Length: 247
Image 1 (cartoon, rainbow, N blue to C red):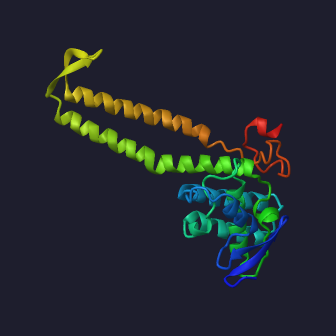
Image 2: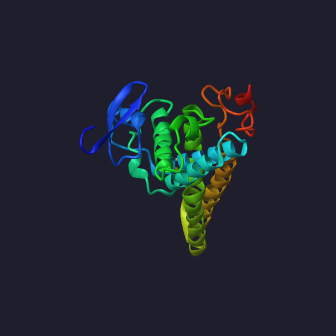
Image 3: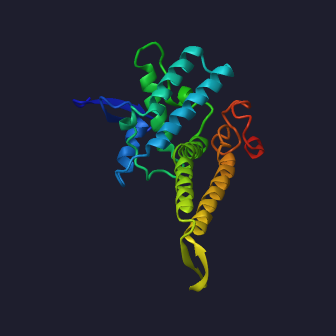
């Protein structure tokens, strides 16, 4: 073992991983194979991965597939990932394999190593942390969860603030008249208040459409596993998934 590094092994052989890194062999291979942009996955995506791994461990525990001690360790480590203090251990480039396998394995390895550090349990990144999952359902779900969280936490509040600000200005300028425009020509006069009120209405209508779309975004493909058949996942792992995932 090289000083400052430890030796990790996967099905393709051994390689050196920084001693302090929580990731393992597959993440290290991704670092070496995809040194493209230097841009890691964003905070919201990593948070979503943590939330998904916590939820998966909870379900596998309740189904009797994962012992209580292992589930508790995964849940604790997953919450630490979601909280944001471990982002430095997610170095995989945003430009990677199409299915996001590298990021999924990055999460599995970090959670497994973190949860095993106290020596009370020994977790396997695939068999335990990734139980009942695949990159093909985890990564799309992480994108959807991240998008929904950002929409509710930042986008919708920002749009509401903009609409309310326009309403205030609309009242202030209710009697200020300007020339209307249509077909690139002067038209009937309108007030600035009327115009700003229209903008506010458009924004509020957009918020309604956004909330309607988010109902579909919240339907996750978890449980579909590798090719949507649910292979290697308990039939009740994702009972709320669309019928196509159960065929």
